[in-house]
Image (cartoon, rainbow, N blue to C red; front, side, top):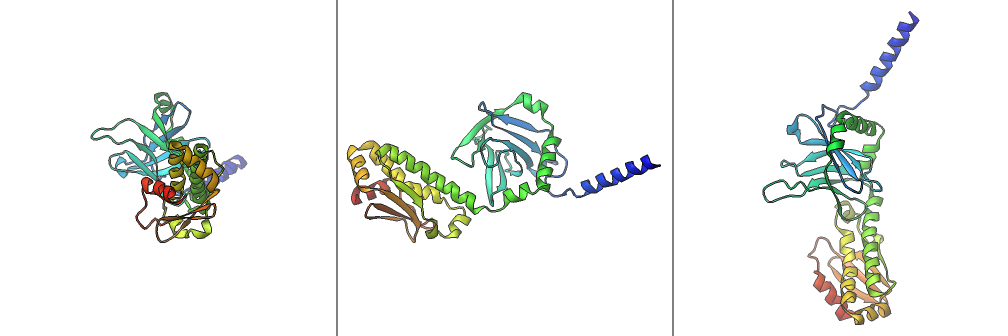
Length: 277
């Protein structure tokens, strides 16, 4: 009698625990999955949710060092099955895709990097696909859903996106200093950058990197430009304004961006420095 009671209690406890599992998208039946891997070791496991007409997938990322490494995210695929979109850090991001061809599929699959610009090219991994258990991927997704990992990752993260824009500027400054033989400091003045630009996903880092890229090009082509930058530029300060523009204040380049307005071209940016330095 005591043994039967123990088994009954355990059954009830397990039933309660499973009863707390969510029943939202991503929790239904799954189909056979596919593993795509790179020679450098990165991979994704793509598991379709049934029915296939839903175009929904669970994708597990193995991208060491990146922000979504180890996560299983719910994706919505485009009708042609070449783009997979998920909610991450408060934005809808295309984290996995197949390069588009004119008419046919290309077989060139790519994982999006989040902590650096670029993608990782992957191909179907037959051996790992054969060993993949779709239920294991879904189980990990449910576990991350329960412990809050998914909710935290899907929430808007201002610090994450400011760091990403800062990274783009830092990389552009490093390249510029290498080309110019200089030690110019570059930064985004976030106190002069409305939160709305960040919230709307504007390409702040790319816009702010533009003057640095212009100087890189000039220094790569001209020794005179190298000497001028070394002598006259110590800092590049990027901020928001009503129009794209630049001005020189002592040894500082004050660069203004206005994502809602027409941006300047690379040639115009180079001409600004040729006219003002």
